[in-house]
Length: 262
Image (cartoon, rainbow, N blue to C red; front, side, top):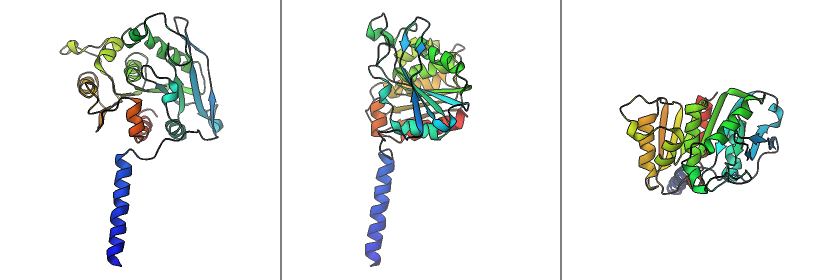
């Protein structure tokens, strides 16, 4: 009998380990009923309409809370963010807004070639600036405590927000060198010169995601001050696909903002 009990305990432990390594619980597909969504009108300085989904706990609609801005990757949209992440953030005391960048989703189209959005500092940074402007005029948002999280170009824009818009904490997932350098104006060639560093930054990447792993490491080493952290996962997946394979990243995102945004 003792032999069978030991086998059962061993199998149970194995299942627990597998759950953690695969990223924990699966994504929920529906928000909790207490979470409400609005679609505020956000207009950029160059007069483009940015589509947005603004989430909050109904019981705290008029209570000032920190805001988390979610920024999708190139050729995606705001629907990439799971209900699990939004639920977890709101239950942790945040309000959340997810946006469609220009020429994506339901937002207005930019007057430049699609690919140029990856490198033109006069384009998508204005979308994020417009969200910050909206947040500062929205009383239920604690505008002194705004954080950004994004994948790929969204990650670069999150770091841009820390550099130039006063974001208190930011998270970049699968951040690449070219887009980061062009959107933030901070280039690797500037090493050795005085470069403004930002803190409270978490970077996440798959260690087999082409050049992104080493490029994220360069950004981490060169441009970030403490506190900072770089998490690598055993994966070739990029951005939102990495989160799908490792949904535990949603907990990392929430924990980072709980620690550095409140």
